[in-house]
Length: 498
Image 1 (cartoon, rainbow, N blue to C red):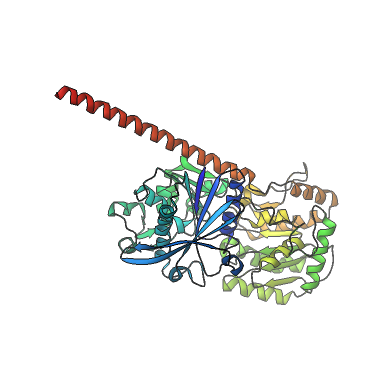
Image 2: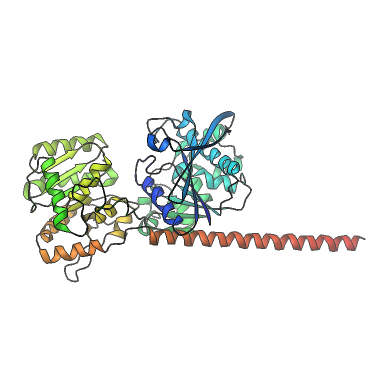
């Protein structure tokens, strides 16, 4: 099967969040199943120089964005059975940030037009075009509008419904090359909404966990789009993400101080080294809790700020928080860590290597999200044998099963209500079991057995692709039958006239 994916970020080229990890690993899993994978991405300034030096120049051409004619360079890169094409335009993509620019509508409309030009220039005829998040949301609409002549089915994956690509109505005339008849498929509350365009026009919609697929039908999680999701409930599938177990491997990870695998004594050496580096009390017996996150409300940080001082005052624990984000959370964590210098550290940056070392050092990983489409942090934590403590929402609910003392099942701890003291009580219960060797060892064995890779998820995507390609074949068959029937009818009419 020829599968083309369109996305706005991909590790190791450029990354702002979990989307980049998915685009890095899902195509490789599909390529391992002997399918042809092509990924089309913008070429941002932040691409590492060692990769940039290996790019192959393919061609250059002009791309029209209404009356503006813009240069487009096309570069390729191949790795692990996947071919990547990068859309180059310094005016649009030579920026300090991937998103959040005042002209994002024009930048990603250009990317959409360049995407189709790339297919034409390369003579690519995909069986499936798989689009990811709002930055690629126009592509399914353009397919339905007939800008590409081949019978192609589109899949659109919602990685986070909160971010939709919302722009003024004026961009429809200024940028989109569409007849007014298509306005209704994009307009929402007096704006142009790229996410809505994808939800209305894609042949199939997926989300990144089964629970999130159900949650977004409710107004609390639906972010104003629940009506359009409900209208196509029969063509939405939740498929939980995986992680690349070769990248996230504590036995071979060069960031990890002491490599280990299913050996808690070796893992504790990493905690001892981290305690020493962070000037914390050095002790194997003190449980270390780590939170690695964007510091935003949706990650459940109001719960943590509400209970953190009480936790540090009443329990013998160590808490390490790493991330950047909203000033109110940064200020709160700075203040608390200053008041508890022996037990709390706030690292106000994000560093990938240090994050890996914190996963390796920690006993517990905190993820109290208000909502979480899938989440990768809890999966990485499991891989590094750090026990997740999560709220039961979205992908956290699907991947973390609360430990049960009676039957010994479960690979973490969870709480249901978005409530700070439910969170605190769950942490206290986890601390209690930390000091119970029988339960702790059972819990670790369950963590070791957790399925984290893409094998099952890639197969689920292939089921969707196969179903859609079968529909194409049926549609082509019916079209041929109609043409043949029409031809016979025309011949009969001609004979009658004669």
